[in-house]
Amino acid sequence: LLKKYGITLEEKTLRHLEEAPMTWSGIKKKMFNVREKLSNEQQEEARKIRENSDAFQGKVFEFRSYFKETAPFAVANFTRDKSIKLNHVDPAFDVLDHFHNGTGGDCDGTGTGAGFKFGSVTEITEESRRLNESQELFELFVSDYVDLRRCNEELSYLKGLWDQVGAVMYTFTDWYTTPWDSIDVEFLTDETKKLAKD
Image (cartoon, rainbow, N blue to C red; front, side, top):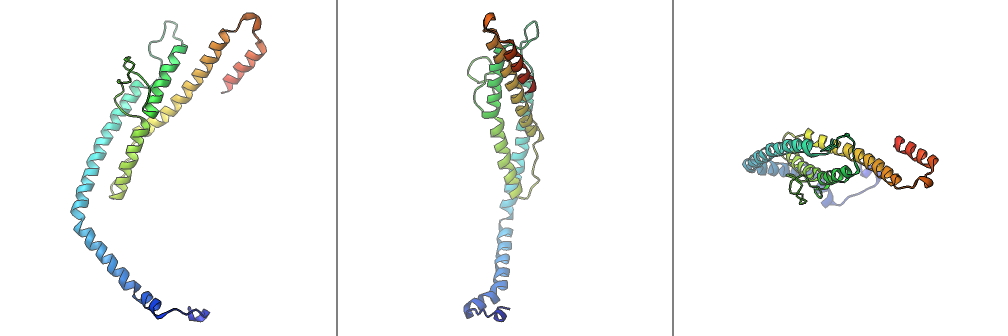
């Protein structure tokens, strides 16, 4: 084919091309021999990965339970009139920040953040990614940590919810400081409509 188009190759190159299938077969044979020699180590490593996966599944389950118990799905210690107050917003953001970044937050009331038992969703998700990578590498069943995915989704929803609560609470608190003779009713009506759209 090459001669048809006027391309000539050196003898050495042609010899390498002719020997390529045999060389490739030799490499594959060496690979299978090495794989067979390492099969015990590979099986042992696969066993360890399965054990780590089982332990991690337990950690994810505990984290999910803790998340549902601790995350600000509702306002703790409602006042008698059952309304959300401005002082509920910052603690909710602290808890959300802890669950997302592993910083901030204080669920035990000591001011140390020591009441949190786990790291952040981000850290645990990264750990699950590394474990899934190992499972793929050793051709094991790749675990899908549904509880962890739910925590991520709910954390995102809670962040959006508390952002809205904070925006409304801070806006109205700021308006409460406006003197009566300085109130612009049209402006306040427009701003309230904007908040309703968001």
